[in-house]
Length: 151
Image (tube, rainbow, N blue to C red; front, side, top):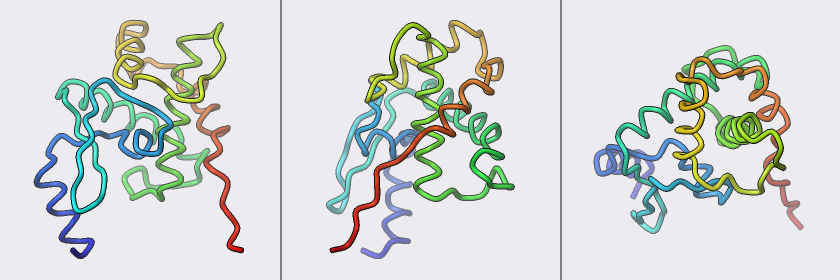
């Protein structure tokens, strides 16, 4: 199956996809509303909550907007590399976790994206009221996996 046909089929079959799919599939976060499925020997993630997906979408848009300078991209709507998308997803979740759990250490895996975003809404009433200058510090600090050398 060629890549374009795969992407089209994926979008058609998975209308409510998980916006934190890269982070979930890489094992760096989990979500109580995410359901894994397999398509053409690949894994995909589906979101079981329409309201949850809308909140995640809003959060990611805000994170992209506030991380533009940090990640050095001018157009907030342009496609991101896999590494930059992961930095926004995982670094943003880690920043949000640290903001809401100031007395705790940063966990290796953010356990529930849905619960974390809901907690942020409970605390700040709206996602656009989050102190993004604090959250973006974690986006800047996020380091992906080390590249393996070819030997």
